[in-house]
Image (cartoon, rainbow, N blue to C red; front, side):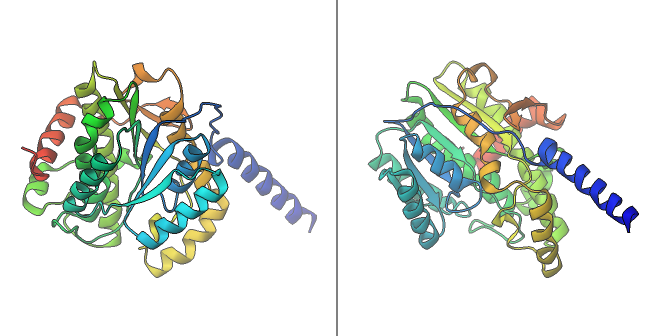
Length: 318
């Protein structure tokens, strides 16, 4: 019995050490205020997007929750207004799985909002299926929808004295690749619809996020806009809501033991959005509120340039 207790105590000690050194993640601490500034956060009715929007609202920003689900987004608006004491929090309809919805959102925003200081491309999915335009869901939502949204709002961002684009990527970008032949023939970066294909598509889309950030930074050089991408950590969110039954049974247990809560997962996003002095690092990748390296593909300027050109064509911008 004493041996068993000793083993359990050892396991608990190791887990505690790992939790506080690896799993818990860094915390961003800053007193910066955002009064008079406007931020858009996509996918901000749930997951890490909601605490991101809440933090910005607490700092006095006008915060636009750009979400697909009207009911959930309006509930999040109510929660954030109540907790922050900031009434300048509102919902605007945005479905990143529809390029027309992206265009409609941008048109509505540009007509109603005179400024934009922060664009936080936070929304993401791990699922199979196709977007309204026939693209693979992960590629269409995680990359292409955000790509179009950013370009449509770029002139408004440039009008601000200092503005930033934040793109939530993932460590899994290291497992990603971009097959342009497949993209041209299948409008996707994978060939199947299984859970494995959905996971692979997610990895590929996260590499696209890194490449988009790199090329965007190159094209924004000399302007007032900078951009950053990040790995938020491994988060217990609703992103896996389309998992199969076995995965859904295992996922909550793993989440409780090893994953960050949504507030913890928002910390690096907030760091990239608010940390002073990051401008020389535009285009770079962050995790745990610190600069990190990306994969070899993620540093490939030619690949980033080609993805930009193909994305422009797929969005009908060229």
